[in-house]
Structure formats: C-alpha cells, structure tokens
Amino acid sequence: MSDQHLDARVRAALDAGDGILRLAPTWVPRSFLMPGARLKLARQDLYALGTHRGGIDERWFSSTTAAANENAPPDEGLSYVVHEKERFTLKDAVDLHGPEMIGEAIWSKYKKWPVYSKFFDNLGPIPHHMHQTAQQAALVGREGKPESYYFPPQLNWTGNNFPYTFMGFEPGTKKEDIRKCLERWNEGDNGILDYSKAYRLKPGTGWLIPPAVLHAPGSLVTYEPQWGSDVFGMYQSMVEGRRVGWELLVKDMPEDKHHDLDFIVDQLDWAKNVDEHFKANNYLEPIVHSGGEGQGHVDKWVVYGKVDGKQLFSARELTVLPGESVEIKDAGASGVIVVQGSGSIGGLAVDSPNFIRFGEVTKDEVFVTAKRAKSGVTFKNTGVEAFVSLRYFGPDVHPSVPSVGDHAK
Image (cartoon, rainbow, N blue to C red):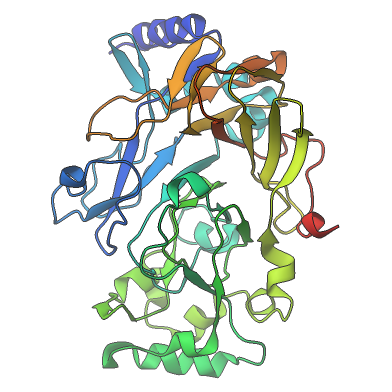
C-alpha cells in the first residue's frame, strides 16, 4: 500500500469522526499466566491464538507499542483504527499526522505516542517482578516502564483466586537476602515473597508503580496506564506451583549479565523497594476533577502523581448519568474505553458490550486526538444506566495533576 493511499484512508477516518477514531479490540496472550475470564471475551476464545501462545489475559488500549511475546506476529499489541471497511494501525495514523493526533509537544519530543494502557486479568497472582528504568532498558536497546493501576468496579464482580498484591520488600531486607533467593532458583519456590508484604486490593482504588520496584499483581482486573514498553524481569521462581523460567528474569538484561547475580540484584531500586512508607508514597484513591452531586456527571482522577518528578501518564474516570451530557475539554489526546452503559462520544455511538468474540469489532473504544480534545468533546448518556468511561493521557498533558496522597487531604 502506498503512503499516499494510507494517508487518504487516515484522513477520511479523521474527518468522518471529527478527530475521534474508533478502535478494534487488541487482545494479547501471555504464555506463562492463566486468564481470569472477566474481559468479556467469550470463554471459547480465551485460547484463540493457540495454547502454545497462552491464554488471552490482556486487552490493550490506544497502543502503538508491540507486545514483547515470543513467537508473536509483529503487530501484536498494536491498536487498529476501523472506519467503514478500512483498517489501519493507530501507529500509522500517528506517524502520518503526529501533531494533530497527539499534540505538537509530545510529537516534537517523542515522535510517537509514548504511552498505552491495558486491562490485565488473571485467575491468580503473577510472579514478583520489576520493570526496568529507562537507563537499564537502554542497555538492551529498549525503553523503561513505569506503570499505574486502577481497579474498575465494573469488571471486578469477583476477585478470583488472590486479590492481593505483594509490593517491594519489608524494611530491613538486604541485598544478600535476595541474592540467596536467586541462588535457590532451581530448587523450587525461591522464597522471595518471604521478604515482601501483600496489600489487599480494593475496587475503585489504585497504585503508582515506579520502575525497578518489585510487585506481584493479584487477581483483580486492572486498568494500567503505563509507558510504551513491555520490558520486565521476574524475580520469583514459582507461582501457584508453576515454574517461572530464568529466561523471564533476564530477558531484558544484557546477555553477559544473565548469570551475574550481583548485577541482577542491583537492578532493583533499593530505596523504593524497602520504603517504610511504601503505601503512603504509592497508593491512589479517586479525586474529583469536575462535576459532582446534582450536576449530572462527575469526572475523577484515578491515576495521577509523578514518577521521579515527571508527569508521564494520568487517567480519569467519567460518569454521566442517564439523560445527561457534558462537554469535556482536555489539554491533550486520550485513549478511551467505555466500561458501563451506552451513549455517544462526539459523533460516535458507543456502548459497553457484555460478550465479545475474538476478532469482533466492538463500539467501546475510541482515540480522541489532541486537536479535538482541546476544542471539546460531548459525552452523552443515551441509556438507562450510568455511562462510565476511562481515558488516559500522555506525558505532561496537564498543567497540574494531584499528588500521591492528595486523596487523604
């Protein structure tokens, strides 16, 4: 396909949606995890890509980031725009119309949409792991990955097997303690969770997770705005009786360091991992941004705060009551997923489906371009229940965001 033809298709979709693009669901499997079956994907499709690829336990939103899965096609993880009978990647649209799509500031600095979000859904807990910092990931030609969590009530009708997340280490944990855990890797459970603390997860709350901080996500469905990378290192050798391969620990570390235990231990941010005020410094609860009682809508911050002094991503949850509408003006582009009810976003009809077959195009996800977001988008409830959507933003979009801990003030 010629660049000229692709450009014409992208332009037609942008014009038809007046700066709002409809996206098809992007499903991602993980070979080492067990799906929790709460993403509305039909049960018979949970292994639609084959058992060798693993169960589908993630849905990615407004993604221009490819999934780092073994044996994956090159477009796995990439979001596709759907317009009439046309289909092309969101990445292509951003590459062709960067300033209009994501804003001049983000385009000038990154030349791409540098963030994405996902629903993460598992039957049980996953291994205690970290995501590399930008400097660490650069050693293998990749990018670091700070991330955040919000547990949407609409998808968490059950907590599944273990709705608790181990995070960091207990204060007083020493590097030699964790080095010994790595030495025991092939002896069964290496005991790393003996040095950590589990926090009970609560729908309607969230966490901010800096890079190089260990966490073993529990079994709540999690909405995860994050940096556009898929790097990680698993530090736990077994989870729920299942082996975790050493290769999943070192996959994003320099090859000559794959058996250097001191290097691997030093990949962790020790100050943050043993922080005695870990919850106070990382826990999030919603904060009202606009609207409220008697106003027909409420727009809440659900992801906010800074990572190492930088505003990298943020997210809001918008609820519009039946028969109501509201015009929302944002300072930048956003990826939007509808989690409850039906209505319209700009001129596009949207609704939250109850049942999705693999490959089906739904009407619950859109991308709002920076140009359109600044001029205002009307969210209208056309149904009989609350119309709820989540939308996430890129770096430095907002002049100010709440700080971690502001919910308690």
